[in-house]
Image (cartoon, rainbow, N blue to C red; front, side, top):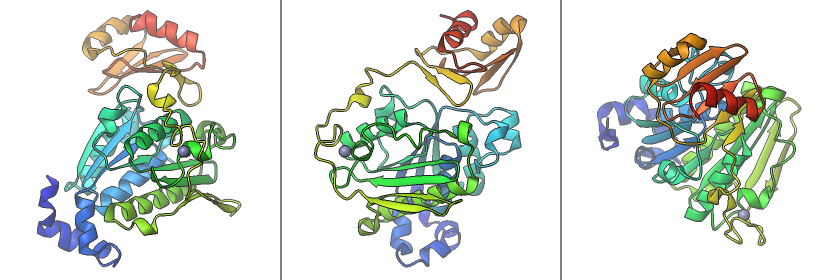
Length: 347
Ligand SMILES: [Zn+2]
């Protein structure tokens, strides 16, 4: 249903009544939310939680971008997915859109099964007025930072690993950007959920803070936006805040406006993707799943739906997307992954 229908009785009188009663939002704020367009980059644990909160809160259009598919190990913390999604290996963006439609059919969700890259970032984030980080890697965060600083677009950094969460609002032209605070990827946060585990409560806290800051921004409560890098550990109860109200004058991104990540010169086409997986996204290669299934069947177990094709050939599992991108599980060796791809998909 188009967002222009937001004043139908169900939406405003019933669905959002408790949120409208909250004075800083009110009926005016609720209308602003309904007319808002937000991009969520990544739909794992943080993305699921933040998209779920904002969808329920009535943000009119959510663009959800994710490159991955649902697995059983996601269900402990990724609140938009269920066992059926994992059994079908549904792409997370698609599964998220379906789940949201079941609890709020009055907003628009645009799922994008894609890896955010310098080549597609303008198209995927172009119309969003606010960008929410829910990725699991600094490569993508620096790319989002470059794009948003260049465009003067606000975005919110959010990360969680183990029992630790960290978040920061970036208001280009006003506050520090990600590269001001982390000129290089921080050492402490490069641990991943695959190596250090993660508490679902740490993710949900960081997502709750991110969603709240997003709502403040969208209803125009700019003066209430936090201007610090906030980190906390839900297990040890340690908490810290670092002021980010002022950009660093010698920042490469917002100071020198040298957007190296956006230029994408040094970007690898083969990337690590969680533990024991390699992603290959060398070129755009549209794939016909029916044809590919026939070709691969003699070599291993193969199945597909409209969104992904899975090819199991022990000890490897290759997941292929319609645009030719692949995630190869069972190796961390780029050469092995490249050779499997060349052998079975095409060189
Ligand atoms: Zn900066």
